[in-house]
Amino acid sequence: MAPEPNPRVLYAKIPSSQHLIPGEHLVYDPAPTIDLECPLAKGQFLTKTLLLSPEPYMRERLRDPAINTYSTPMKVGQPLVGMALVIVLRSEKEGLRAGEYMVGFTPWEAYTVQPYVDARVEYKDFPSYTFDMDSLILKPVQDPQGAFPWPRFCSCLGVPGMAAYVGIEKIADVKPGQTIYVSSGASGVGSMVIQFCKQKGLKVIASASTDEKVKFMKSLGADVPFNYKTTPVAEVLAREGPIDRYFDNVGGEQFEAAVNNMSLNGVVVICGAISELNIPREQRYGNISTLFHRRIRVQGFLVTDSPDLLGRFFQEIPVLLAQGKLKSEEHLFWGMENGIAAFLSLFDGTAQAKPVVVLDPKYGASA
Ligand SMILES: NC(=O)c1ccc[n+]([C@@H]2O[C@H](COP(=O)([O-])OP(=O)(O)OC[C@H]3O[C@@H](n4cnc5c(N)ncnc54)[C@H](OP(=O)(O)O)[C@@H]3O)[C@@H](O)[C@H]2O)c1
Image (cartoon, rainbow, N blue to C red; front, side, top):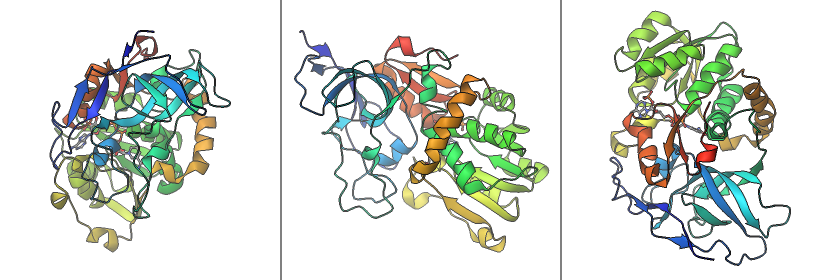
């Protein structure tokens, strides 16, 4: 059989702590090919990548491996690795058949012999707080058969949805009548936090960077959606607060504004700090004596800390989605050649919603 093109997005060079440069740090490489009839060893299987999910944590992985943080780094000279929807083309793995769909980590390339090996980082000599990202292996998922569109597996049924669920169910300890502020309220995580909190009877204040996103947050039920680019966060929180809970997706100045507007015994859920990912580590923000003065409990978490909750997540959320009781939006980028733009859209404000890279147009319908 003639070799098939196997385009990929390569992690070509470790970025400094500043922004990623396409063509330098991340390179679209259309040259590789693959023989789709290649021999597979026992336990191996061949997948075709259908959808890719660019996510903020991937930026933290693109670093000097000598720097310790919560995630293992990625390997220079290998494709990016991240969450994706794939279909099994051939399988020599027991219990796995051609035609099955799977969600989990895979390299950013069109076809992959699984389990991928070259892009894996050996999980050895890391501090105990470092999570082995390559352990997020592909797992079978059901064909939703039209109950909801495929890109939902990257947004509300993917890492963002799970993070919102774990943050609210495990950390936030929310009660009806309370007021919560969620930053990046139109993001994959934020859009689910808004909906979970409305279902639980909270007043929800939520921010995003454009008026379009403000409309989206309103459609999700946010009581006070606002554009943080045009209205200062501190001003809105002083008017609409005090807040009992802060679901922090961005860190930095918004964190400080939220803490300064918290009520007694408030809780801050630290889900992420996307505003800090592209600035030098030594310039990252810190307050934080107010946390102490107001006895605020602050707790970071990784979605992967709570496998126990995720069983419940997959029982409850697909049903609500299929019933139309949850909404989700994705911003679709078409083709591997737009993969880098999709990833950079996380940081440059161009993502209109949770980005998803569609490699096979059949899977791109996003109702
Ligand atoms: N703890 C966990 O296990 C876990 C799991 C998943 C995600 N997270 C974190 O949750 C957060 C949201 O992730 P997601 O997957 O939902 O992201 P997403 O859907 O890809 O959205 C990212 C959004 O972040 C906002 N943003 C980008 N740069 C920013 C800046 N400098 N200041 C303020 N906002 C900025 C942008 O929204 P605007 O245009 O509105 O600014 C962007 O669209 C991230 O911090 C991520 O690291 C944590």
